[in-house]
Image (tube, rainbow, N blue to C red; front, side):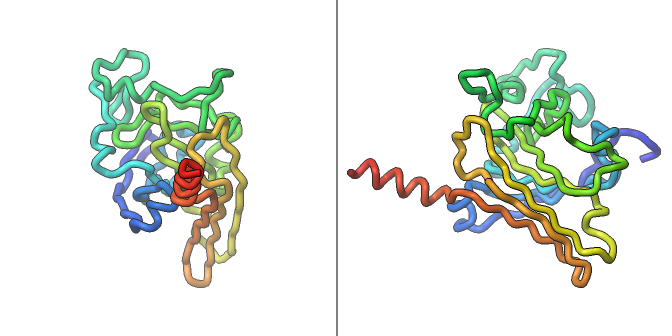
Length: 219
């Protein structure tokens, strides 16, 4: 990239099974390679992988767009959007205290990261390591029209390369959580003997929650 900002990602979508969708609320995953990194370059300006795990369908994602672009890759937040679809990037769910809902308490909006077909990126901007120190996966989330579009483990390519086995795990809590099926635990492990990387997510099953609600209504 010759030091330039670029978002030339290899984008694709893998549909989850009906059973997986039913239990988790996740529709598909995009395994996206950012070979040159992406803004903010001081944080993410190294080759890495983005596992965009979407709660909406690929068809719904086609409606996630804007008419006023800040650059070739992101929607403008300084110039007012002229369409409802564009304005929805900047509509956020907050609780009675004004805190962002359904994200960890240390997450902040990245207003200049409103990406068409994805959403507005939200993450721990203060706690994210600088690019030269980024060694392990971190969590990114995406917001659009007041709800969570995607849940994304993002990690440098160096994590899934080399002869050393690697494993990290995280527990997540979400402010004023209303989407109960968001993962409360996740881990990622790299096995150098076979080159396989394993992502494990755990949380409350969407379908069980709905069944319990129906039973309560019957009572």
